[in-house]
Amino acid sequence: MPELPEVETIRRQLAPMLEGRRITNVVVTDPRWVAPASPRGFSNRLTGSRIESAGRRGKYFDFLLDDGASLVMHLRMTGNLLYLSEASATPSAHLRGALLLDSGAALAFTDPRRFGTAEVIASPEAVDAYFAARLGPEPFDDDFTGERLHRDTRNRKTPIKALLLDQRRVAGIGNIYADEALHRAGIAPHRRAARLTRAQCDALRDAIRDSLTAGIDAKGASIDDFRDAYGVQGSFQDQFLVHRREGLPCPGCGGPVVKTRVAGRGTYFCKTCQRG
DNA sequence: CGCGCAACCTGTCTGC
DNA sequence: TGCAGACAGGTTGCGC
Figure 1 (spheres, rainbow, N blue to C red):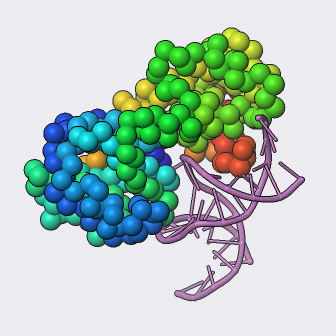
Figure 2: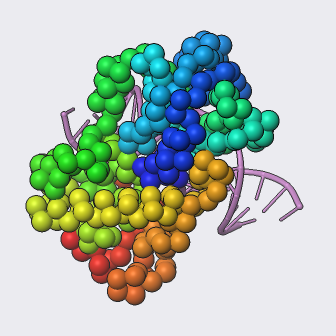
């Protein structure tokens, strides 16, 4: 579910509601959500802080606090972050924790599969180090170029799809947008990265941006669990070119989309349009 | 270092 | 209907 467009959709909705608000209480209903911190320690650390901004890096939320620390969250597979204008409306199903705000609203984290995380990172420098260790360039930043992608693929025999899923190469792409971008670029997902030409890397860079932009415009893809900050489904799943479309016609040639397995993930592509 | 894969969890769907 | 097994959008750590 939550790849860059889904996280960005929520971030855009939350930013105006959270910025300038003070956290009046924090409830942790699943200790795993904040581990290795303790629920009490997590709650005490955040209570009284003001949220300065709602940022994003890759698939991570980065809520900057007034003391320079950041509250960093990740939805992993099935997490949802819901904005509730009335704190009393906090959902009970799969609730992992909630922040109560001085506006009377609440931010609730739900997650059936319990992979999602929340943690406080003490300083801007520590946040930079945290992301630098895990994430490559943002797909829309100037330093993510076809040239860079070409350089990063040299001597790499891993399938290009596996490389796109590696967050240190480029941040924010997951299984959905990897399939969609590779189709747009006409590249087979199992193609060895080192075999891509410079022109293909240029095309792939553009295809990644186009796929992510389309996803953001559609307010994300809701295959199953994903909801935006107001509990509403996205619509990008209705525009998928190949992902989850096994046996359905390829929008490029009309031939059947095939399902295979690449990098351990369910992978969808068109054998005719993706020969590169 | 590069790569593949299991593990972390729960829910849902498929096939017998 | 019941049940075992496969599979699901992500990330990390381990073994080779």
